[in-house]
Image (cartoon, rainbow, N blue to C red; front, side, top):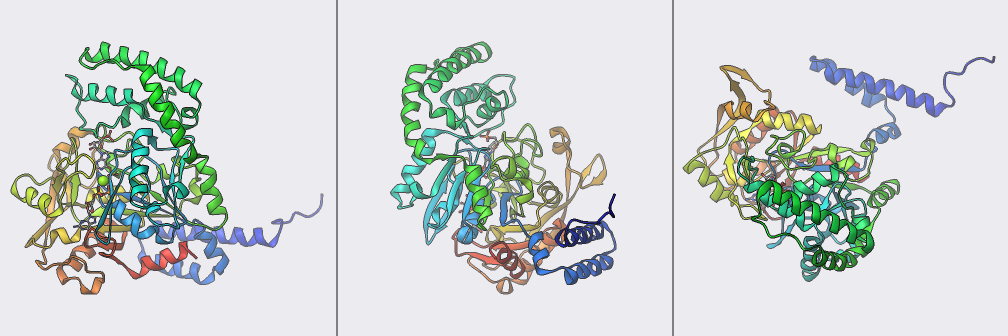
Length: 496
Ligand code: GDP
Ligand code: IMO
Ligand code: MG
């Protein structure tokens, strides 16, 4: 046997050294000793080659998601950031989402279609993790076409996405109003039952929607089953579904959907392989995630960062920056625990100032104070490095602003988030109060121009939540946004 070589070639050798260094940095990050940490990181940065650092930043991707219970302003932020991305991909949810974008006063509300399509150079991808209602999709396409958006050239729908059919809505309506069932306060779009069918392996995928014979037998079998379920479980209140009519309607819709359908995982991976950049547009929010949210008062998909990989077919090693969007306060629509909810006049004032009504359903949103334990939890679940704070301007009139900094449960202080609903309902939030600024911040685009107390509020949020603030939104319009320097530099790296 000849002498063993330690590596096959110099590149592998360099890679090995590089990975050892990364381990050093990782262990430093876990260390409590921050001076040790910065010294080791500095050493690493100084000794790494440019190529190696580029490797580290390999992922030309960013996930933009909601830190709370949805409606954080993801649509606005995705729109602002999409300027330089090659594609924006939705990875979860369906037309339960309502993402508002305002450009020079013109308002767009997107439900299924990624906000990136509002930029002519950006592709919009509806990933395999989405549940697609073909009729809702076509309505949204028609609306965007009417507004002059080139959806036909820019938009792609995954052949592996699941299809929402009318019986999903029927089951949901019956379940939500059935005596003895826990009412979730859903958006009534059939989202939950469509995901149920997906997991039960009895759903219909877009690729099969396009095969009339298969569609016909699927609809016939499903209608027989769902009609029987509704009758047996929920009584006969709902009119039974007519499979022949349903088939005619959906077979016609399928032909209109067909030109958009492709293997979107392939499209995204090709974009990345060619050096392009991809943004993943989250829907809903971390606390509505099926695993990590306030179950069962959640939606039925993976709204958190992990969903970006499973919901698009881009591998987890290609997922880079995670950007978490948080309101300067908190809102929630529908039922479920909400520790910092403000009851009474103060909550109503915040709702009025923030115009907190659902973009899709028009339902009033419940309002509450910023919840730091929840934000930390959300950052942990998502691995979020960056925060984007929206709706700072909504707090402009307040003399004092409470922030929840800890939870008290049975007289004990904790920042652990109870997994059970009863536990979360029993939480007594512990507040600290910061001074308000009582000056208008609307439209301010430079951090230095913010009132001192507003800067303090943001600094406090950053310090306590453990993620860095990269952007602040001071109004609903695309232009009412500030991008902080280090975040701008991180974006430059993605687009390098
Ligand atoms: P999404 O679901 O996360 O995209 O959020 P929605 O669009 O459902 O709700 C956010 C609402 O806040 C929309 O009406 C936005 O136009 C609005 N909005 C976003 N950012 C700001 C901001 O900084 N200030 C104010 N006043 N409104 C904002
Ligand atoms: P965007 O993307 C706020 C809530 C519903 C309900 C629960 C389950 O605009 O932030 P579902 O219809 O999904 O089965 O409802 O989830 N919900 C949202 N709340 N924003 C959303 O989306 C939401 N999508 C679902 O109100 O409480
Ligand atoms: Mg919304």
